[in-house]
Amino acid sequence: MASFVDRVVLHVQAGNGGHGCVSILREKFKPLGGPDGGNGGHGGGVTLVVDPSVHTLLDFHFRPHVKADNGKGGAGSNRDGANGAGLTLRVPNGTVVQTTDGEVLADLVGAGTAYEVARGGRGGRGNASLANTRRRAPGFAELGEPGEALDVVLELKSVADVGLVGFPSAGKSSLISVLSAARPKIADYPFTTLVPNLGVVRAGDHSFVVADVPGLIPGAATGRGLGLEFLRHIERCAVLAHVVDCATLESGRDPVSDIDAIEAELDAYGGLEDRPRIAILNKIDVPDGRDLAEIVQADVAARGWPVFEVSAVTHEGLRELTFALGELVAAHWAATPEPEPTRIVLRPRAVDDSGFTIEAEADGAFVVRGAKPERWVRQTNFDNEEAVGYLADRLARLGVEDSLAKAGAEPGCLVRIGSFEFDWQPAVYAGVEFTPGQRGADYRLDESATRTPAAERLAARKARRQRPDDEPG
Image (cartoon, one colour):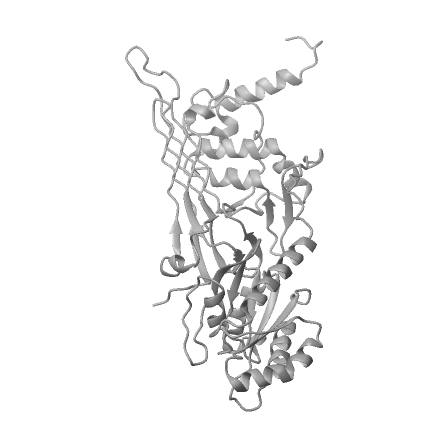
């Protein structure tokens, strides 16, 4: 059974908003007391929060589908629906949130850092909220918006100050076990360590975190031997420590060639050129290992790196190594500029920004894009004529009707708004003041609307407005 998981695909579903309610107050002595339908509750969102006590993405490996609660629908007597409970997911420090295409959405570093990965849908307004001086008793309500649904990739990059790199069986696990309280698995065969191990090391006034990165082999930067799975755990390290096995019995290997091979993989991976290096010649408790360490020390030091001869078994040289690592880490962070504080930039909407755009597609359709029209369409109940008429009024007041005409749209052409498609018919009375008729209906959607008494009254009212003041009544 897996005990450490550092990459998962998470299927996220935020809660849907509750529908608004259509209700008319009916009480004794108040047979038609007016609309009293409540609003629907908002759907719950899904938020990722860094928790220092979590060290793996194992929970999401077994439960990759997460869903927040939906908002409740509104009810009569002006009762609003309850909001859906949000879902908070605890993730390890250093979790990177990406899309399935590799676009980074958030880099969560630091305890308490939070990111809302999916936003819950808005609740629909009830007919009490939609009433106004002209539409006194709406026979419709808004639908709740669906919550956001998406797939994200969670990738863990260990947060450590020192990264121990080297070939398999170089003694990295043994070294971290004696430098800190970490207890990784130690055995005498390659690839004993398959997951990174972190340990806290104290050296005088300095305290830092050391990461034991699983062994690297030539070709690791191209994915050989799960190299890419291991290399990403050293991206955040301030210091890279080469752990070299001076007592290896493999032919064709020596400390210098081992360092060259690991450096070639680090260069191929990229982004680590500016990290200070240190060389650790390990296993000098073995006589042949001590002799080889003394022979190659000058060659390794010629790179400009500090070189230490140590033994994880006898603890020889560990004190000097610990203090040197502490000083290197402190010097690196002292030279690193402080991150700039987060600034909130307010960008007012331009005076000529209509809030939507219209584009003509190759198939002759016109696509309307914009937050408002797309949201209004999602909240419209198209089984209710009055709701459709209300949507037409809102779109006309926003300027969509006029913009479609200016863009070259002709009656009967296909128009898309979000996931909704319809054949565009310019509404003669859309956006103008009118007197609604029967609840749940809209005479403007009837082909014979121009012959109805309501339409005649509307035309007469418009004519009176446009009549010159000196014209007799």
